[in-house]
Length: 544
Image (tube, rainbow, N blue to C red; front, side):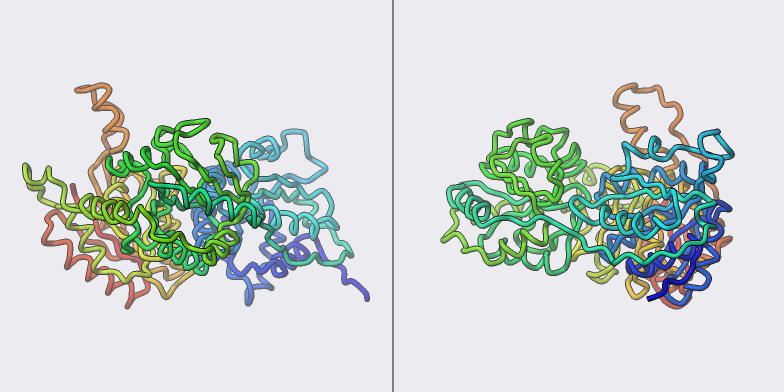
């Protein structure tokens, strides 16, 4: 069979189609003009979303991946474009999100001379990305692209960077296409499942900790069946709260920033912790204090897709190299423990969680003009259980994580890397990926201003997101630490902000101000109606 001649750029786009790509996020650059031209011919199959900053491209691709389960794809140009993309690549690495990021590169004839915007991407991203590739010849493009997708989705998922020298994209070649990637994950053995059950059978105070990537609806359902059959208490890791229905009677809270002290004590005093999908990083373990490293006081079962993660910090009694779906399917059919002795503890832990969600006692001493507890209650009541809630980083997010209840998989988009600027583009990417769902971005004033330009992207692609801006005119997290460590010496943390409703209007969005609790409910109803009817963003500024 004859193989037609194709340029490297067209060959690359053909490989994207074979890999199942239907959305590409980008900031255009001259270094990959040929790819943009080839995408023009593939417009019926691949939707091209153009951003206003490269970090927005990566964050939107990240949100797309989390919602669809498919690797996100982004294109950025060389040098400054690659540098702008670095924050999103780092976030995807810490969150274990499968991404393939294509970066323009100087031509091979100019390489090594520090040509215009030239960077050695293997050096730049070697410690951040899961892998870094560079295409040296056009006829190797199918091989490199297939390997990038395979790597991004197998084992512990993560971001793969592929550099594209400009002249390679222009080369013509005759070469066959690659096949679509096939994600590979480990699975537990019969012996490991038997060992896990034995540890559970002998436990008095067990609990389950959930998180990580690679989840599906079936995975969540299988783990729910395992939890219910054994009446286990469930804790979700930092910013993985949507891995288990927060309204379920076995859900007892999140191990994250501002953890419920009673939950922290419960984790420390557990005699068996089954951690599934989590890296057990610094925030989830409260600075590696909930579980002592390297050998915890608790019996630890650690299940993770990345074999390199097992035993890296914690030397668990039982380590299982497995994807979460593969383990969950086995646990769902495991013979339950008869009459578990911890059922009363599960009920008690649930009661402590519900108490933790009540209105803070400090409000009895000082009634706020704008009650954020009431704001979170009204948000919970106003949106459907499948609504997507996105946030970036800042003290504002602790209100959301403590008082909102995530009801299903794919309802929480939040960066475990703690990077500011994530929430706005992630929410827009979510709305583009799932236009039928309600999307709300809860953000701070400092967080919003790091990616506010993407409101233009939302308007251009009719992404009707509701943005809830908690505005305290400061970098609040840094101010908190500053006032604790250097009381009375505030410097560098105050912010002068724009007129946010006017700024929103300039992008074609609606804008409203709320300064009192009673005004929030009507403003939220108006915003939800606006995004449904107009398919444009709506912004509510809560002045604190």
